[in-house]
Length: 102
View 1 (spheres, rainbow, N blue to C red):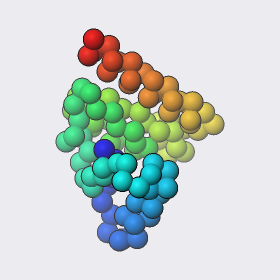
View 2: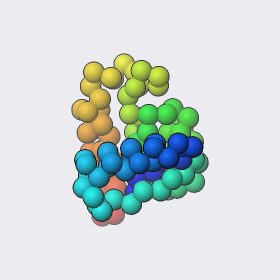
View 3: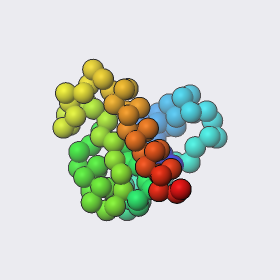
């Protein structure tokens, strides 16, 4: 699922849907608009977010997180290595989920 924080402007949701359809393919994902993403946390859930607070709450609620590097968050030193860091997060998550299910 793609989780996104609801915004008041209608154009925000339309822009996100356009971007997701372009990069993931139309009809290939489910999207949930939710302010408190931590409510969806469980041991086999991964939150990819650029907000420190969202990641901290999700982790405390039992989920796994990947804080996507941006200039405003704790991973700012990884900005030049965003995609390799992101790939590392996905590979780590995938291996942990696979090992847990063996």
